[in-house]
Image (cartoon, rainbow, N blue to C red; front, side):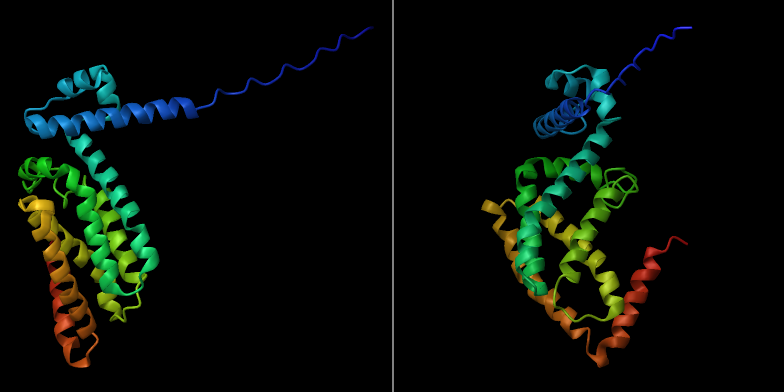
Length: 239
C-alpha cells in the first residue's frame, strides 16, 4: 500500500500588533489633547464628549472606547502630567545628592510641566475642589497619579544624603506631596509674569523644609516629632 505524504501546513503567524497599538495611542492622545483645548476654551462643564469627538474627528463611540467619561479624560491628563513631571525631574535627581537642591529642582520642574495648562487650571480646580469629585487629587480615582507623585518625592528623599529619623523618612514623601499641593494651589491663582511669585515661594520654602528636616534629628525635638507623626496618623485613619 502506497502512502501519500503531505507536508504539514506552515503555522499562520499572527499579525504584528505594534502598528495597531501605535494608531490607537495616537487616537487616544488626539482625543485627550482636543479635550484639554476645549476645556480651556469653553470650560469643563460646557464641554461634552460629543463635542470632543467632533472636534477630534472621531466617532462618539470611539471617544468613549478610549475614555469612559470626561472624568476619565482628566485622569488621563493627571497620569500623563505626572509622567512628564518625573521625566523633567530626572536630570536634577541624577546630578544632585543634597535634599534641598533635589527638592527645589523637582518643584520647579513641576511648575514648568504645568505651565502650559495654567489657563485651564482654575477651571479644573473649581470641579476638583469639590470633596466628592473623582477629580480631587485625594480621590480614589486619582490614586494612580497621587501614588506616582508621592513616589517621585520618595526618590527625592531616598536619593539624598540627608540623615533622617526613620519614622520621618517614612512619612516625609507624602508630606512633601502635600506641600506640593499647596504650591500648586498658589500657582493656580498666581498671575505674575512667568509665575515669579510661585517660584519665589518654592525658593523660600525649600530651605525652611531642609532646616526642619535637619533639626528633626535633635534628641530634644524627638518627642515633638513623634507627637506630630502621631497626629498625622490619627487624621489619616477613617474611623
